[in-house]
Every structure is written in structure tokens, then in C-alpha cells.
Image 1 (cartoon, rainbow, N blue to C red):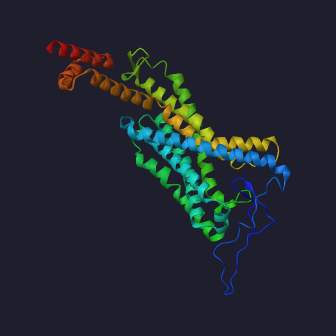
Image 2 (image 1 turned 45 degrees about the vertical axis):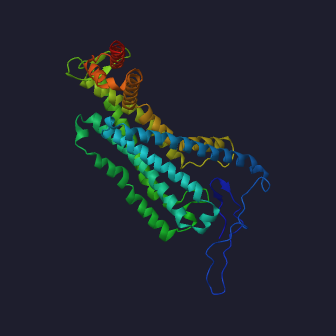
Length: 396
């Protein structure tokens, strides 16, 4: 059994073999002896690889840091979508599931880092194969949820009321269930045709069996780019046609400027503004994810500047994908920001009154606050608290 040529960025001497003991009764030992036989190629054996080994270690560190930062950002974004129930709608639920699939993808990546080593690869351990299968499944689901993002955007822009006709469970089936019949055939092929080395190509190339799930993913990615191009085309046409119609449509949405003044927006203007924001997010994120996935199939020369650029650039994009998703779809989401600000204002107002008011006068303060004008909510509550203090002073 030859030693792997490369595993997790570390090269091994393929001229050596891992041995497995055969007993006198004709049975084989359960585990192979890899510790004494498979040795990584170090600078002492090939001095010209010393610099490359250092870069590989730096790239591994970048991967670990990037996945950790992404996982933290994704968990925060998931918590915000779960806590802010007032913003739940089909669009934000799709964002929520996209964040969830990246959380599972990053978690499975860390599991792989913990269980995959020379021992588990050569032994073809079941838990190693399970970790690789889960990682590939969540990698496919992430692109299918990006397809759902593009599909929903296209329906929202191309068909005025089409988004309400398709229920969210349809999108959930596309995002979570459709990848299952893609991964299952790959698993079956690996079990019956190439059930070895933890289903990882340790030679550094591309296993043609992996195109069972790579092919549909690339197809979905290309379809998403076509959908995105059509969305941009429709949006440009609407932007050119909308200025003459903005003042003649009825008003149904409102927006506030920096001074707190509320302005009425026409329905056309509001839909265009929200559509533009959604398209901007997809235009930024989809190429990032697409470029990252296409780079998986690129194999630059084994030496030189192009190799180093590929290593660092690919490691950065692969590891910070979750961070990009969190920032674009959650942290810069206007609905999320507005709702968080409203919750913070409510919390501040409640603590302001609690700090300045007596508990015995809480009922009186509540009635005064309810009678206050809606022009400035914070100032109204503070005025009520101040009024209550005067009442307490005079009645004392």
C-alpha cells in the first residue's frame, strides 16, 4: 500500500509503502503500519522544498483563522435572524438558510481537520468517510441556496406578485433536498468502485468520480450567472422607465431621512430600491463564490510566483466565504440594522425611565408615556420620566 503523495498540504515520499501484517491463519491485521513507513518530505530530504513548506504552513494557518472568523460571523448572523422575528419573510428566511448551510459547511470543515490524517486515510476509517461526505453535501447545498437566492430575486423583479405564489417549503426542498440525490450516487460509486483512502484524492489531482457532484454544482453556478444577468437587464429597463411614473403611482411605503422626517415613497420606487439592494448583494457575492469554486479545478505550476499566489488567494477566498455571506446578507441588511436600532432604542428608553422613576409610580408613568406624541418617542418617554419626578417631589 503506497504512502499518499500529498495529504492536507503535506507531501509524503511515495516510494515508501505502508505495511499491513498478514497472520499465519490468513487474516490481515486491522490497521496498517504507517508511522514507521510514511514520512513527510521535509527540508532535510529536499532542501528546495523548504520555502514551499513554509508557505503551505502559512496557508494552513490562514485557512484555520479564516474559517474560525467566518464561523463566528455566521453564528452571530444566524442568531440575529432567529431573534429578530419582525423581519421574517421569504427573502430573509432564504438568507437565514444560506447562513445555516455555511455554518454546517464550516463546522464539517473543522471536523475534517480533526479526523483526517495519514492513519485514518490509509485505514479508510468510516468516520473519516462520513466527515468527507458531510462536507461535500454542505458544499453543494451552499450553491443550491445561492441558486434559490437568484431564483427568488428573478421572480421578485420579473413578476410583480410572483413571490407570493411560491411557498417557502419549495425553496427549502431545492436548497436542502435536491443535493441529496446528487451526493448519494457519489457515495455509492465510492463504496463499490473506489472505496479507499477515505474518499480523498491524495495524489493532488482530480478524481473523475468527484464530477458526479462537481458537475451539477457547476451547472447550477452557470444557471445562476445567467439568471443574474437577466435580472440586471430587467432592472436597467425598469430604472429607465420608472422616473416618469414615480409621481403618478399611489403611495404605500415610507422612509425616514437622517432628521427623522418621514417621506412617502411610491410603490414602484420602494420595490426598485429594495430590488437594487438585493441585486447588489447577489452581484457581489455570487462571483466571489463562483470564482472560489472554479479555482478548485485550476492547477498552476508546482513552483513559481503563480503557485504561491494561487495558494494564498484560494485559501483566503475559501476560508472567508462565510464572513462574506454574513456581512452582505445580514450585517449590511437595512431591515436588520433598523430593527436592531429600534430594539436598542426601546431598551434605552425603558432603562432611562427605570433609572429616573420610582416603581410605585410606574402605572402613572405608563399612562403619561402612552399619551405622549409620536413625533419623537425617546424624548416623550424622557419627558414623562421628568414629569413623574416632579410629581414625586411635590407629593412628598
